[in-house]
Image (tube, rainbow, N blue to C red; front, side, top):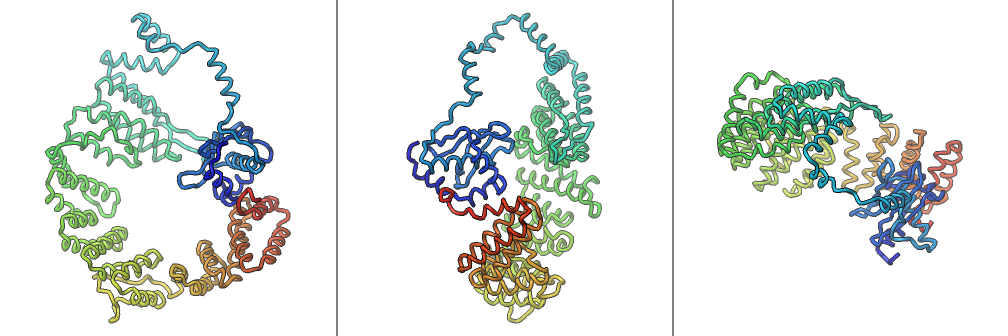
Amino acid sequence: MEDTPAVDSYWTGLSWDELEQWVGTRSLQRGRAYQRQGRVLALACSREGILSGRVAGTSVYETVVGPDPLGELSSRCSCPLGGDCKHGVAVVLEYLERVKGGQEVPTELPPSAAERFAATQRAAAPAPADTESYLRGLSVDELVSLVLELADLSTDVEMLVQTRAELDGGAVEEVVRCAREELARASSKPGWRHYWSGEGYTPDYSLVARYLEDLLAAGQADMVLQLGEEILDVGTEQVGMSDDEGETGMAISQALGPVWRAVGQSSLSPAQRILWMYDRYLQDQYDLCCDTEGAADVFQVTAEVWSEVADELLVRLDSPECAVAGDRWADHYRRDQISHWATGALQKAGRDEEALELAVAEAKCNDGYVRAVDMLIQSGRAEEARALAFEGIAATSTTLPGISAQLRERLSGLATGEGDHAMAAAFAAHDFLRVPRIEAYRELRQAAGRAGVWEQVRAQVLEALHTGALPTGRDDWPLPDTGLALELPAARYPAANRRLFVEIALDEGESEEALRWYRQTAEVSCGWADSGLAEQVAAAVGRSHPDEAVAIWQSLAEGEIARRNRGGYEASLPYLRAMRRLLIEVGREADWDDYLSGLRAEHKRKRALLETLELLDEEGPILGS
């Protein structure tokens, strides 16, 4: 193999930890066993440093392994898993074993037995006939005879020929009847999937799609659209009753392909085609219309056509079918969709002022405030946008908090755009005090920093977390009034914010403060309940408080071991490794040895755990072990 220093360095520097992170503990163990058992039947390393091999498992699998563009291990394999598996591990370890022994590794795999057999067959076989030339050389009678023979051999061919003949003979109604019968059959049973065994049933819509294709080819685009509506009706009901991972919906979606192509070939006017598509979107409850690329050209029309579409949508908005009855989500959704399309159509028609008036009116009657505020901002009408945002927040803060949050973002964005950093920081403070969380704290720190008042704001919002008293009404509060009502969550302070205090201290590098608050959190939860937070604390205080950090790692590890399954044992390894590294760093390696010996003795009957613990002894480059 040619010298490839960078590649050699990548493979020879590979560690056990990297292999374990790549495929997991179990696949690493099995891959090691495969390599030791001599199951790597063939191995190669390309000049680019990509490994390939054949590994004997249930069958002989071909595996390709190499670094991805980010330098992370990745593999493809012909096994059922498809890659990142024990076979890839075996190939990597076999390569490193050969490098360690100074053995040559070829750049290409030798041909497999199947490839050698296929090559022998190809050499012995005559050159393939030119099928197209053969068919073109047949007479009409010979072609008819061949097609009839094929129809006798295949029901699919027979049905295709019969359908084409009926359509050619003008028997469109008969083909449509057959299509509806096939649709009734395909939609008669819900799809299902047993997730553990892999068994299940997915409705077959392929014949429905074929009928649609044939009808479309025969110039029956209008009938294809009619059938498309019927497919969506029965398909929606079928998907609603199905219990699978979306396979039924995908089968229906694929069958609708000819329908979307039929829209542009139909007798509908350009405006009617767009409206027909909009009606299908409204009809679709399960994203069955997810792939309507075939109808993309339908929307490439003139301003006059869009004006016609807009007028029709405006008529619909005034009709009883778009009336909003109380809190019914379906009514609100339908009206919001139609008003959204109408607004867009007005804009594409060049009727911008009407579009804006509609958006503002819909904001007041159907809570479409975000769209209207965005349009006002884009139109340069900042004051109107601000006033509507305040109105929207008042209307939605209780019932639709998501909309209210988006409107507060718009107000903050307006302030930032105008260079009013103090007001932008005031909105950030409002959001943090309303729902205290670390992400909002970071955003407040950034905003108040731009306004030059972070230290004052920080002290007062932290005090609010301790006392529950709002800082915004105080004389020394350095930020302006947002004009928004604010109440702190009903909770006992500061107990409700212990976790947040830990996160803030960690975020600001105050490890002593983080540990002080975390002790209280652990006492309340009777242990290290939050593993993610526990890890962060242990990593932060390891040097200053090794005993407490070790206790955290130990508690996390033993919590996983207590699950008494291989998954738990594997999950304990990162915690045990962190515990070992810390004890070695502080010169207490003997404590680690005593702990591990005791752990093995305590669980001596758990063979799976003992096998997993063996991986603790392997760190650093694989070739060094």
